[in-house]
Length: 208
Image (cartoon, rainbow, N blue to C red; front, side, top):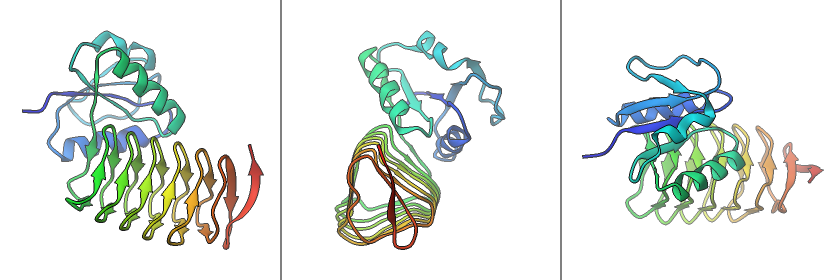
């Protein structure tokens, strides 16, 4: 029997997608934490602000850091684990995951996501609706992949990278840690760490 999950929302609507996936998968969402008053499904109470999640922290209790910002998500997850909590995953029942794929803890897989054989999905990585992750792709920790992204075989994506909606990355390309790929981009070359690219073909527009 699985334990109830506490969801920590943060800005934007990403956390509500996570809650819907948990509920669809039959998980019990014991409550949510957020500084605003977002619409939540019936039976999911708002328990306090973002910083009040520690009131429920105890050994073995499951939490789902659900903010869209990958750096914030990774930092919060580290605090949960240090405090003795566990990371839940939210995998929508309409996602298709090969039994030969590897999926870490704290991940979110939205409806229509496909993860192919030998793909590796790192801890805390979020794959939003209708993403396709083909064979032998490797995604690092806390990667944020927006809806409709296509990652053909052998793509590597570094920690905390952000891939915008509808982007396509050619097979075998590498996207560095903290890089940003703009929505609708077509990536035909490797993207260095911390670089923002956009367009078709994708070109550098910013370097951190």
